[in-house]
Amino acid sequence: MASLLVLFVLVLLFLAFVSVYAKSPPFLTLLSGALVFGLAAGMDFEAVLQAIIAGLGRIFTLFAIVIFSGAVIAMTLQAQGHLERMVADLRAGFPSSWSLSAIAGFLFSIPTTCCITAFMMLAPVIEKLGSARGQQNMLLFLMAAGSVLSYTLVFPTPVVIPLLLGFGADLSALLYDLVAVPLSLALLAGLVLLFRTLSGKKGEGAVIPGPAGIGDRKTSLRAWAPFIVILLSIPISLFVFSLSHEAMIQAIMLAGMATALILAPAEARSAGLAKGTRHAGVIMFDICGAGALGNVILESGFTGAVFPAVSGTLPAVLIPFAFTAIVQAALGSRVATAVVASQVMAGTALAGALGPLPLVLSVAAGVCIVSWLTDPYFWLLHRTTGSTIKEVTLYYTLPLFACGTAVLLVALGLEFMPFPA
Image (cartoon, rainbow, N blue to C red):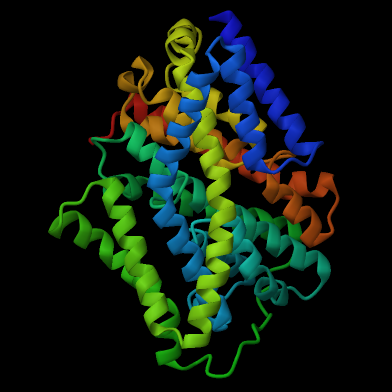
């Protein structure tokens, strides 16, 4: 047990070093980590390669349609200039620039299936809300935090999907979101108050310039249509077709993509497909690399050797949180962390001992709590805002650390007061 645990920690340190200092692409980093861990754990070369292939294939099967559909939706809307219209529509319900920035990041992160993609698409619009550079940066930090909250907590996102599939077979996706959505929105409201207080300004007066026709209801409806179809497809998939979680997410994302493409003019449709395919390819390689690493760890016997030995040292609900937080600190990628955590822990006695809702929230808290130097979002904010590492840590890492802690406390509370599944 001790040797596998030490090896696991050493491989995570190796991955963090390669990622941060060697600037290796995530897929290559994760693949090399899988090879190193498998061979050092005593697996023969054939077994390691077979485990890598199986892990890659399993994750591609689960995420290919989801990621591709989300990327195409995002790029098709961007090609039509719909983002400005959608943000302007949101302003009717969220007149404060602070709440508008937060809710825009929160909402757009879900259907685009990538919080970083949502940020890159929205940043040019959100920057226009601030009257000075300092305020613009604060709005961008708030938007980033909002996008991470929904991405790590709300179904369906690529972070939550593997967690529900791995741990929540008996947990309804709708029931999960009845807890996760209010929880994430409460945390988002807390962040809005925090950032307004830190800024010392309400930032209510900025006006969002938008393209012609921004007030046209038909134009707004076309912009929101893919998201409306995705939402409507969830109860239809569950109650009409009785689809499983895995099948449902494929169906609703395909419906959203089809809607976006049908409503788009030919030029925007072509641009959305071309850019979306490229963007989805990059994301898929990274996620598949995580699948390879997770499956090699699983096949090495790590799960059976390590988790029973540490089960008596921490309360059960803290073990998945601690494990996930360590993996997140090393890998940086939230989806990669969720994939590895779900694969490694799904078959353990620990997973069976905890309620599915507390277990999913405990892992989600671990995914959220360490957003620092290995996190690509951290460096994107560093470049976009021109802020120092200390400032990004203060306005991005620490708020998300607080949110992760709050989610863990909720998970602890639900474990001692079980929520009916």
